Image 1 (cartoon, rainbow, N blue to C red):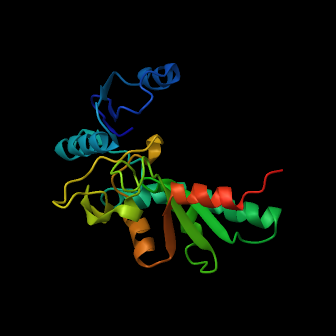
Image 2: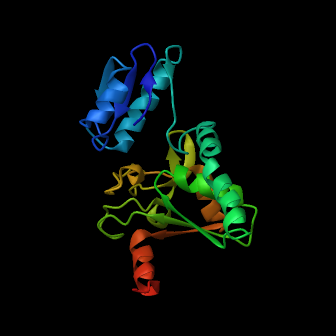
Length: 217
């Protein structure tokens, strides 16, 4: 889900958003007079929201939902999401008296991962691992593994890794996880990859390793 125009109270959604969910209608439609459904992907919804925002700055407010887009959007979302990592550090001290050795987070746009990783970036002894959606396979063209298979480009005012063709056109990602269906990733996660502070793998690798290491009881 992406922002709305304040005067028209308009939300932009993509086809995977729970538009027909009764709870969605109860929570949102009681408070807004018009919902604009975008018949497309997260890419379409977010692009339309940005277009609305920059066209109507006096009457629009953009509420970012991931660590993507122009500054300060990634910073704002990361700061709010960082409660995840702060809680992890606190709970680790309470439960086992120390820091974790490895942190693993799913990666779509990157808000979940940055929320967890940010607190521990300076703890060099902690491995940071991001897991991306393989979709129908990394060679199928239908996946959301931006950091594993993407290339650096500019999208929505930020330079980061993107799923794009040889001409630089943004590709349509695929994942059964709505929050992972994003063609780009946050610039800070891209930096963590470039600096080798974090490592990123596709979920098919994670599933293989889990099955290999798991012990049936």
